Amino acid sequence: MSAEQPQQLPDTSAISFPDPGNQGEWFTYLVRVFPHHTDYYGVVWHGTYLTWMEEARVEYLRSVGVPYEDLVALGCDLLVVELSVRYHRALRLGAEAILKTRIFQTNGVRLCSDYLLESNDGKELYLSATTVLVPIDSDRGKIMRKLPPTVKDALAKITKFTA
Image 1: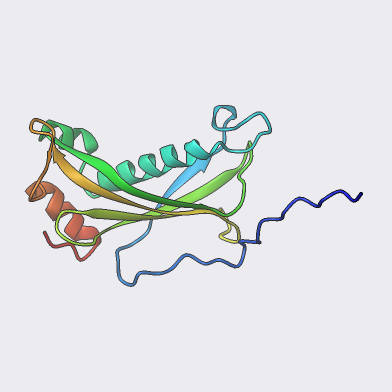
Image 2: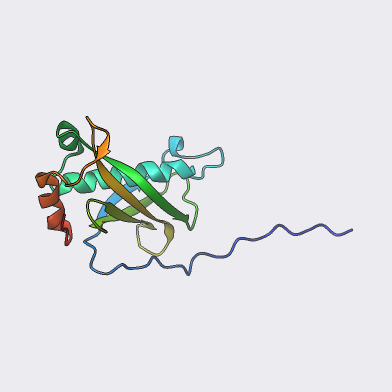
């Protein structure tokens, strides 16, 4: 009786993140792996990546003049309605990496963000992801038909944004 070999996952090092064209400039955000980001084996827990993605997106908006607290004061919240994540390689305790993100519009008020988490030298790809967000009127709980003008103007700085 022979022991079965465990199934091996395909190598993902050759996978490249698709370039959707002129969708805006990449914003870079440094992440450091602390103990609370990892599991018992020192590997980053999968949910930590989502937290880093949100932090990078919020900082990106702040960098173009849209602090998230201002959105909240306007009665606007950005809710994630779609999320796609591809984990390419494990990130471990003590590591540093660069999370790149860019925001672009697909249609109407939908905001899409692409993410790439790479080693500092750009040679290792740890994660690629996409999110789709929609603005919600906090009081009514409904999708806004238009973005607040300050948000629309700020997004126009980083991409060909029309709403």
